[in-house]
Image (cartoon, rainbow, N blue to C red; front, side, top):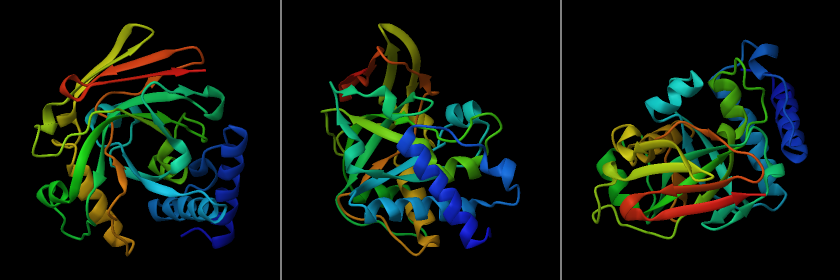
Length: 261
């Protein structure tokens, strides 16, 4: 493990980068000995400082759960980060591009839990039983660490590159629709850029919820009722810039639209 003062310093660097919308050098370039546990410790210091400052945690994001995302990043295992209430937008929103760094969009499903879910042996069936409803979502990626050469250690420390999410209006219980076959057709300024289906996320998008519950058990925690779980992208990330209009068609689960200003 990295020494506590190093973990605190790296968390402070990331907090400042978040505040200024900047980018810092790779952690793994400066500390090649850093482990995944170190990166979650850095993320945890940053998270706790935000909660102490008055932000409200509303859920968790899971990343790198599909082959498309793993191939796009060169990272081969899932990760997770935290989501605060002031990062949640609704479809139709205007999103301030300048609040983020290395801005990209991913196509996902989000789940709201009706009851707690705990590991260490949570299954897909357990996750489906704990879920209240699914809702379509776009994730806005926000990377504060230089992208070239980054590893999962860098990404996790940077709150799994989470910036914001845009939620749609359609809500479906898991028994109302086969969530594996929810499509995503993602376009920018009227041009289709990415397509996929939710089965690309670990075979079923709710599998990631069970994975997260089991991962949380290793840290002595569980997922709580009411939390939003952003389950991971089933397309590659799409770069966006100020002035872009983004639209994603989820078929039976409706459409999300937003504009970057």
